[in-house]
Image (tube, rainbow, N blue to C red; front, side, top):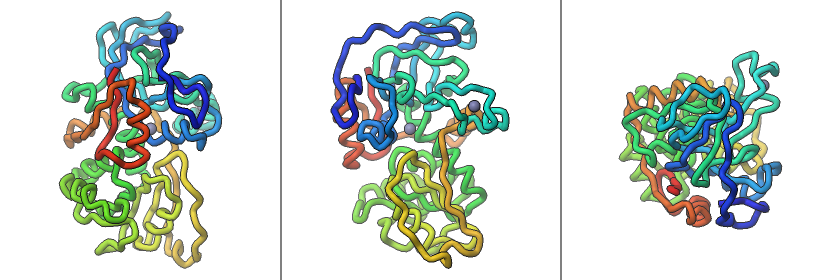
Length: 324
Ligand SMILES: [Zn+2]
Ligand SMILES: [Zn+2]
């Protein structure tokens, strides 16, 4: 499924099979998660994708062939391909252990063709082995929703009372991790979305309500998954001293101005960008230990446009996954 121009539906196409270059593996795609970032690319909110482009950066695939010098995975091995597809390894961020901020990073399904396809290629150094207990479809959402959500969870620090604003693919995974870590989760959904609120309680949230509601206690931290800047200040207003409020999305509407008094007492607003390979390795060890269970809605690959529309409208719970 090819994105030829932004703000236009993806088009089914027969492309030449991608051949693995040096250090790359060629994968038969078994499943590819649908992420809100894909919507931001489609809608033109992220302005510089390679075009034409194959979207998709939560790829579960089986190695078919390795390119020159690629020896990490053998044929038949199952691997995951995340958003971070390549880094230069030498800029100040890479050298400092922050490859997520690499000056020249290339991202899967943005700068590089991704997994809304039957076959994909990926740099083997940025692939992860998939934990054995996870079927292909259930594993796909771990690769971005889970993994970048996990990085956001680390960035809120030790927060005991943690708020999740927007309870979609990422929050439904992170809720399970946070509860496993002994945190108390407060879930915020669209106003009146009682079904999602019940879903959150079922996954261990202590409280669930609309994003316009005040939780029963102040929050020590919050992760804002929904791309709505006003939720950053909403979270700030119900936060305790020292709280960290982190946006986990790549794009967000403007954050409204607010009085300094609401930020005072060492509250911070921040963002999480991308992932490091270390985040991925850590999270993929933790996920089966929790154990994280992902709830997926499966679409055939050719229904990718429908999956994206349903994500935009919030028509499913958990995560959408495409299956070639
Ligand atoms: Zn993503
Ligand atoms: Zn770099």
